[in-house]
Picture 1 (cartoon, one colour):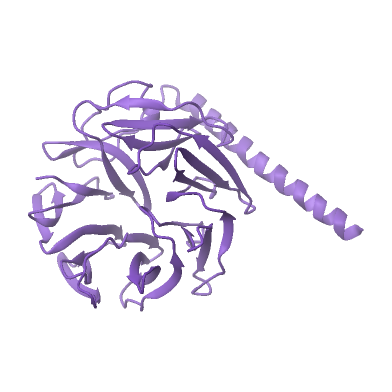
Picture 2 (tube, rainbow, N blue to C red):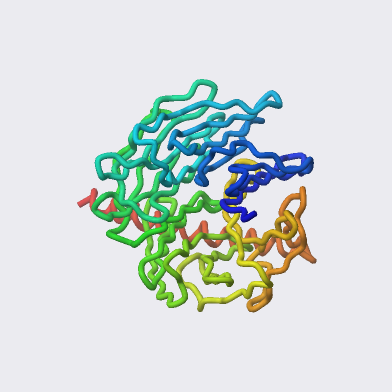
Amino acid sequence: MKQIDNKLIYLKNGDVLHFYYCNKEGICIRTKNGVHSLLKEAAKDFDVVYLDSVIYLVCQNNNGDIILLKHFDNTWHKYTLLVSKTQNVCDKNFYLLCSGECAQLFYTIKSSGRCLLIEQILSHQNSEPIVVAPIRESAQPFFVVNDNELNAYIYYQNEQGVLGYRIYKWSQKSFGEFIKIEDCVGECVYTSSDMYGRHHICAKSKNSIIYIKRTLDGEHKKTSIPMPYIEADSAPFIHFYEEKIYIIWRTGGCIMYIQSTDDGESFGSPVKMISSGDVPLLFSVQNQNRRSFSFGTLINGEHRLINIGAHPPGTALATSTIKDKRPIIRESTNNSDDEIKRIKSALAALCTEVSELKNKLELVMGLLEK
């Protein structure tokens, strides 16, 4: 049975929860105790997070109703969040964000020929759905990340194709205005936050990849990278490893990536990693409250994740098997030297940000004095 939409949750005790969809069994969960079907009548589009000892899983059934499955007190509980008026099933692009003690749910619905982005807070008492904005419909129409204060940044393209974001501030429990970043950038918008709180955005635009970095002072720096090896159904995502930035995507049975060693100012030539057999699968991975993507393979139900930065160019995808363990991280042979190197690199990046901010402040002060 083909497993799609694979999602992994790593628990603090080292156990791994593997959620996936297959045609005969619907949405399933694999644990160290075996495999169980959670909802046979579910459609393939779903998302899941683990937050404060509670599992939140959102999907739609075969009638298009939006269903919430919550696991607490060692029991799964089922709720209906929205009843479909048309009873049609279409991709809702579900995304759950860990926001403090609540899970923020984002998804899309179609209404009167428009694609609407919806937000809803899931907690002990679920809030009512709120329309964030009409958005442009695409393969991956929006993405959401937190800042250090758990405010949600919702990146999307409006109906005119303009890329921007709105901020949901918990202190005000409301959304701010739409902030423009860039005119039409294509589709498959992905955003990730680095250790400094900066946002890194990538999107596919015909035969190129658009990369945008949002600095700490809110400035956006864009780089357009010609890319002849990206297919129509490929969605690029961002990965950080040892102070390097990687943009990764799948083309057929291969993984492609480009690497930046200068904090996103430029990227090198595409590197191909050859599949050792099966087509690489995309996994959504939650480790504590942080979520990311990773490619991997399934062998006899066991998942193998690929750490791109730890593999030299041209190597096969085979990695050490990960079963009910945390992802393998390459250990340094000289922890002290590597830690000093990491700190120096982090300080250099921070100094650059501070210097740019200082220059802007001096310019503003000069204008005020005049």
